[in-house]
Image 1 (tube, rainbow, N blue to C red):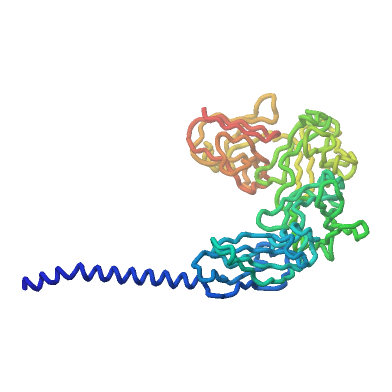
Image 2: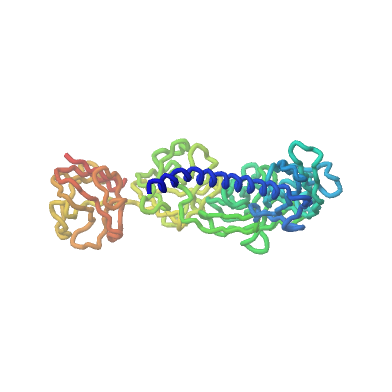
Length: 491
């Protein structure tokens, strides 16, 4: 047994050495086969493509336009590496103006996208966009360290129909547009970052006509109304029809234009055209000061609604959409000095004609402008002589028959106050007792608490907003029913 084991131990290294030698022989044998595969014998260098004619369209700009493929060719059994050079030229140039690309080693294909091939053809050979051109391509093979073994493929011929890229800028122009027909001040649309040829815009359109231009200061080329209101037509000459889109109703709109599909979408926007408006005129305390007119208040629960509550003088007023320039646009009445019961309103470009509302009886007024419905309410205000608090935060709780009275402030018919204990809970201000369906002063935002500064008149108590007291204690609450303000201060 001992002799047998000794024999096994002696032959084990010899066995492992044999395996290692066999593996090395196999490895080098495979490497030799790989080199022979690369040599390709006398295989010719051949160039082909997936298509011999292609029509380029910008809407497919990222897609493959043409794919050129070539065989490996031969290094004539030298085992040397092979590199390739691709040449493309217009037919008839004999490759004298060719584009040359060094493809490197082991590369047997070249793809061109629609966008890249269109740019290449129109820029390198100054081809007129939209024209068709016939190209020739060939591949040249070079064997490293042996210039004698160079080879050239067949010449592959293919046709390319190019396109005129659409504009990267677009502007809105017309009497419906914010800046009218001034082509130097046309309103820019925003280009899409992901879709070529797509532009969007949101803003105020007046009643009137509009179209699109591509370059500031130039009326041509333009995009005009096509076969219907959903389509565009590209116009390059004054002799072509100058059809325009027509906007019937003044308001806020979203516009989406696709220059590749020649389509347009115009939809009413559910956002207010302005976030700030002002009162201008000798009827208001700030007078005709366009640099610092009295600002209206936006209704936080309806951003289309602006209010202005003030003691007005006998005089006129109008509503500018900007400050610092009398030539801005204005909200005005349809006629000059209409009855204050007239509710119609219009947006007037540059304030011409210069219609104004007129206050003949000075005093407190509450004005409400609704941009969505294009209406205005101008109402003289008679202050309430009694105001109450109701809610579980007040000493009287939810007792509408006997709510907590507010105390009028002497010498100021608009202000009421309360000083006393408040519990954790809610409250609002009814303007009558014994009926939950009465009118109220309520918070602009439901659940407002100390720190709230605004309130609003709510007819019949709907929507039912309330202030909230989160910490019990003594409070001083002061309201002004004309200016619709509130102060809630813990003592």
